[in-house]
Amino acid sequence: MNKNKRFFVTTPIYYINDLPHIGHAYATFAADILARYHRSVGDQTFFLTGTDENSQKTVFAAQTAGKEIKVYTDELARRWQETWQKLGISNDDFIRTTEPRHAKVVKEIFEKIDQKGDLYKSKYEGLYCVGHEAFLKPDDLDENGLCPDHKTKPEQISEANYFFRLSKYQPALLQHFKNNPSFVEPKERYNEILNFIKGGLQDISVTRETQKWGIPSPVDPNQVVYVWFDALINYISADSSRWPADVHIIGKDILRFHAVIWPAMLLSAGYPLPKKIFAHGFFTIDGVKISKSLGNAIDPLAISEKYGVDALRYYLFKEIPFGNDGDFSFKRLEEVYNADLANGLGNLVARVAKLCEIAGLVLKPKKTKPVFDAAYKKALEELRFQDALNLIWSKITNIDRQIDQSRPWELIKKDTQQAEVVLTSFVEQIRAVQILLIPFLPETAKKIAEQFVGPKIKSAKPLFPRI
Ligand code: MSP
Image 1 (cartoon, rainbow, N blue to C red):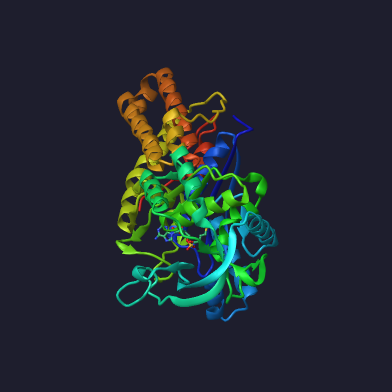
Image 2: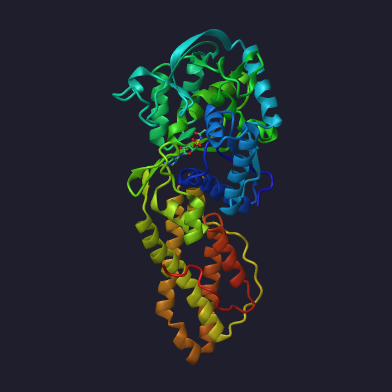
């Protein structure tokens, strides 16, 4: 146990123009796994998520819903929070960028950047995509002049904005990347960003003149702060005593904001940089691209109601190596559920409990302290979730094999002493597996702990009824 070690993990803060879909749940589950792991080893853990509300998307969504914007944002933020609660997410805080605590820190950081001489006023002309909340270049557009991701026509914008001297930070960023080879992970993302920085950075516009919805710019109250510039600051505004983050979990589509603009803002304002930015991949649903804007999103709550939250967590992190793109397939979900959860883990637990019950095994009270083996620890520290799960499941297979070999159902009849020895060993091994399951399958781990606490072990409802 290390009470003094701190661990701070974040998810992106999500736009509230719609409800959570499986892609959002993915990042949130990943952060939850890390938070639960670090709590188990005794680290002072802080897990932050929240909502990104100062976007033009919010304005349009409220209009479409025919609601006053405050009413709309409150309702949507509440529904996001409820979704995470229902999915058992263990976040310690939830930041909304419309909260005063956020606006206060945005103002402070903006002023620090200004005092550093890193803001200047200039005219901006460009193509703005509200879907991305970012400017696009003409050659980013498709053959019809539309944003290729959102299929919408970007707005031609021409206004006098404040610019942030991003270009000034190119050398410092290059140096930081050189000194910190695991600043961005996976490795191919690190290389991608490093090449992007080497290619030269352009200053970016960080205020908007024509928008009304947002945080007023402290240097010019007639403008609002560019939504990305405000959103990134959530990681500090929620609780500045926690900064710097140990890991920002994000999707690969928002990597430049996190790995280029955000570190430059922090360098300018005089804050330490986050330790790591981990970009996960994108997944398709049965082969089709998902996104809120395309309207084919799937609801993580619906899936978890049908299969259970733990089954959804297991499938997502077992099936797709974290960091890679992947496909969410309902067929695979059911296959994996039956093979690994119903037959694998569920069957093992039921089998050992039943044998203990028949043998009338009475265990000496023994509290198993959380023990994570080195390979498992390393896998979690490197966000190799699939490897950690494979490690647990190899232990499960191994216990199954020992049961088949020692034939305890026969021992119970002819050698009760030996039966007790082998059953006690299986119980201890299941307890060890239970500990390893805590970060990944928290509900299941809790059920196993309750069932295997002793002194007597009894059969219980199957953990994962077969589909
Ligand atoms: N509000 C910004 C983030 C600001 S963080 C300071 C934002 N929000 S979002 O709601 O559009 O997206 C949040 C996350 O969802 C992103 O990390 C994105 O990668 C992720 N996903 C959206 N669609 C996804 C998939 N199809 N697959 C996996 N993740 C996906 O961006």
